[in-house]
Amino acid sequence: MTKVSEAIKARFEQLAADAARIPMKGDREDPWTDAPEFHAWASSALNIVEAAFGKESPHTIRLEAIVKIATNGYVTLSQLNACRGAFTGAKNDVDGDYVFRVEAQVAGEVFGDFLSLAKAALAEGRHEVAAVLACAALDDALKRFAHANRLDVEGKSMDEVVSGLKSKGLIGGAQKGLLSAMPKIRNYAMHADWTKLTPQDVGSVIGFTEQFLLANF
Image 1 (cartoon, rainbow, N blue to C red):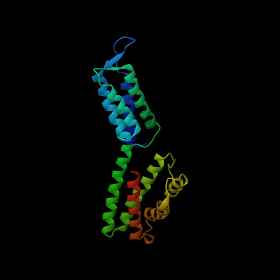
Image 2 (cartoon, rainbow, N blue to C red):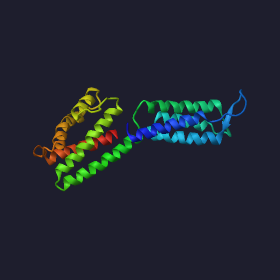
Image 3 (cartoon, helix red, strand yellow):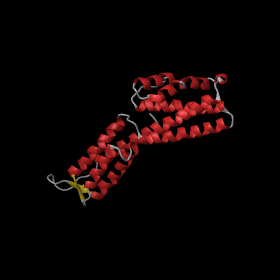
Image 4 (cartoon, helix red, strand yellow):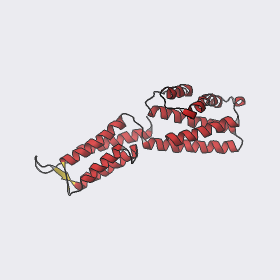
């Protein structure tokens, strides 16, 4: 598990515990809680749900809609429970290791930096350096994409990862043919077999990886 997903899971756990501790007032027939305390929790809950799944995700939209209903000076137990339920639904998906928007965004930025360095090295005539950087970015991106789609790729080679993605229909069309050549180039780069590696090969890895990141990260 990455540090990003660990931090998100920990925050969801903390907010779930905080939601359970929101005190109720009134009598048994008409329990309620103070709006300020509720909305302090709800703001944090919305923030982490949107960070994890995105503003337009069903989890975010549902929780936001329920929170907006509770706009009076007090919040009823049914309103509080509706918010708790929406938040729990999001938390269950987080606990199930579904894709995190933040993790993908951070990963995309890191890979983008790798590719920028690779392109600079290639422009300077250092295609060996560019190959290592570009292949490392592609290798990690493919494994993250596979993991997000529930594929077990721990300790597997790029060849095995590519085969797994193809078998699940996650890679198709023009990408499928282009990706087939990538493991060979990656192996040349990672084993310093420079005589078999050309600047054109490296350029193809950089180009493919850029398109893959745009589509999936």
